[in-house]
Amino acid sequence: MKSTARRLASIGMTVLLLLGIGAQTGWAAPATVNGTAPDAHLSAAAVTFTTGNDNKDDDTLVRAQVETPGGRVASDFSDIGTEYRDGSVHGPFMMRTDTGVTAAMLSSGIVRISIDPNGNDTWHFSYGLTLFFSDGTSFFVQAGNLSLNQNSRQLTTPFTLTTQVAVPDVIGSSASSARATLQAAGLSTAVTSAVDPTCNFINQVMRENPRAGTIVNVGSTVTITIGLKPRICP
Image 1 (tube, rainbow, N blue to C red):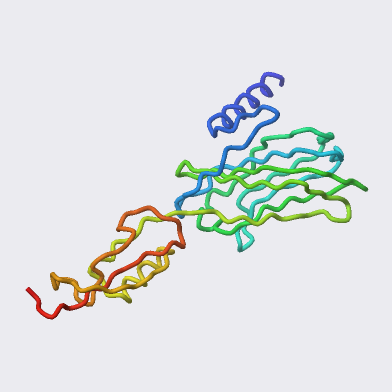
Image 2 (cartoon, rainbow, N blue to C red):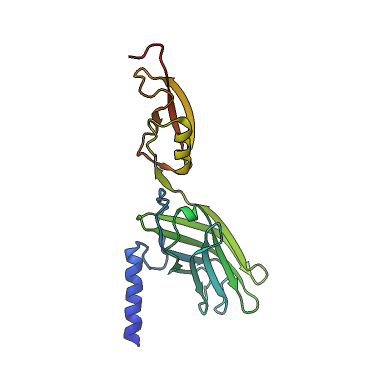
């Protein structure tokens, strides 16, 4: 029995190390890595709690969930039977993860922390939660100076996940077609015009800025320049 427990602990430690989040007390979560690809899948999540000057009783259930705007649970963790003493750090705890959830689905998600006390319990705490994605990026959510008790059992922290996309190639497209293509990629459009001395792009996109293939944040603006006919075409 003991050897089995040791093997499980070893496996858990290996997973944590592979994810780059060490398991020692006093763990500091990695900094946010922005630029997660919209189609990257959530691959893992971990949460750590730091208790302030009012502990969580051992018979109080604590739960942490990450949810999409539609209410789909992307990651979930629950613990009961452990006292979170004053000034202690517990975690990182690996969370059950729905790997079908993509970064795009978490573009504006929430972290929900709740307790279910057996009688009365007041818990003062802070937390750090890291989401790991299949493209190797991660995203860190944290909140401090929090308090839950038998009368206020739940709190939520909204977050906005920064995702990135490659600028589509819209050279040669009409303004309306280019705008539709950029919008479908999650980008905004600004339109300018300039004389096209080559006459190859009259009433079409002859330049775009940033250039096609450039990696930008979703929601960024791409400026397209529509070619105008000169007085004389070559």
